[in-house]
Image 1 (cartoon, rainbow, N blue to C red):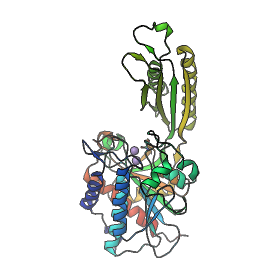
Image 2 (image 1 turned 90 degrees about the vertical axis):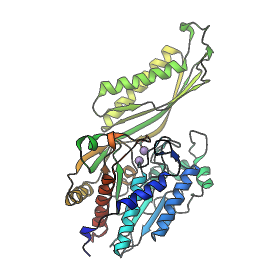
Image 3 (image 1 turned 60 degrees about the horizontal axis):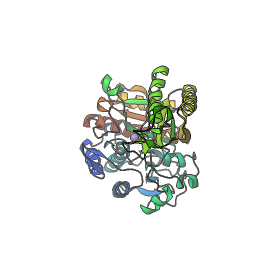
Image 4 (image 1 turned 120 degrees about the vertical axis):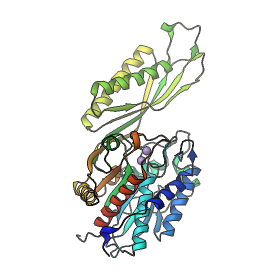
Length: 414
Ligand code: HGY
Ligand code: MN
Ligand code: MN
C-alpha cells in the first residue's frame, strides 16, 4: 500500500479530545485534572481503555508513566510519541492531551490500513508534566530519563500536602515497570504551541529545534503580624508588602534583560490573609526562563541579590527552595529535518521554533534523538480554558506526526 496517501481521521481525533475534556471539565471548555487526582485517574483509565481497544500492550512504570506499545516486525526499541494528560487548574483541552490522542489516532490509522511497521511504535502518557500540584514539572519523564531517583520523586509533597507515592498508589497507577525500561529509538512529541508565533504568522506547522531553560523556586517570607491600624509604617515587617516587591522586581528584571527573558510570580499566599492584619508570612513562587543558560543564571543571581537587600530593608526572613531547574535543550537536528521534510511533503511551510514551554520531550532528549511538532494556539492563549486550535490545524499536525513516525518506524538503518 502506498502509505504516502494515509491521513488521520480529524473528527475521530476531535471526538476523543472532547471525551477526555469531559473529565474534569470546567467552565469555558477547559479542564482541571491536576496530577494524581481522581480526575487524573479517570482520564488515565479512559486513555488506557482506548489503548487496549487499539490492541496496544499497556505497561505502567513505578512513577505512573503509561506506555502503549504496538508490535513491529522487529522487536527492540520502539519509535515513541506521547505527552501528558494532567492539566493545570485552569487548563485548556489541548495542552498535552492532543499529543497523546494524536498518537492513538496514528495507531488507529495504521491498524485500519493493516500496516506493520519495521520497529514497534509506542504511545506514552507521562505523569505530572505540569508540576502544578507536585513540582518539578515534567516529573514522570524526568524520572523515566534518569534525572531524578524514583524514591525522591515518590516522596515529593504536593501544594496540598499529599505525598506523591501515596497518591500514585491511591489512584492505582503505581506500576511495576522500572522507570526508563523502555528506551526509545526516537521520540517525537506533537503539542500546541501555547504561544502567539504560528497564529500571528498564519503558519500551521512548527518544527521545534530547541526549548528554553526553566528556573522555579518557592520563597517563604517571614515577617511579623501586627495591627493594620496601630502599627506605624517604620515599625512594620510586612511579608505581604515584601511579596509584592518581589513580583515588581521580577517584572522589572525581565524588562531590563529583555529579549527572550520571561518571569512570573504565579502563586502568592499570605498568612493570616486578613484585611486588618499585617501579613506574618508570604509563600510565593518565581518562574524564570530564558533560551541562554548564562543569562538565566544571571537573572537568578540578580533575584538572589535583591532578596538579600529586601530582607535587610524590611526586617523579614526570606527562605528560598528550588522547585525545578532545567537547562535549555537542543533537539536532534536529524529529527527536526524529518519533521520539516514531512511537513513540506504535506504541503506546509514549517517554521523552525523554540519552545517557551517545558515539555516531556526535553527529558526524552536525554535518552534518544528527540524533537517536537507544534500547531498554532489561537491568539497564543494556553493554561486557560479559552485555549483553542482550529480543527484543520489539529488534523494537519496529526498528519505530520503520522508520517514522521512512519518514516522513523520504517527506517531500516541499525
Ligand atoms: O511549565 C511548563 O512550561 C509546562 O506547562 N509544564
Ligand atoms: Mn503541555
Ligand atoms: Mn502545560
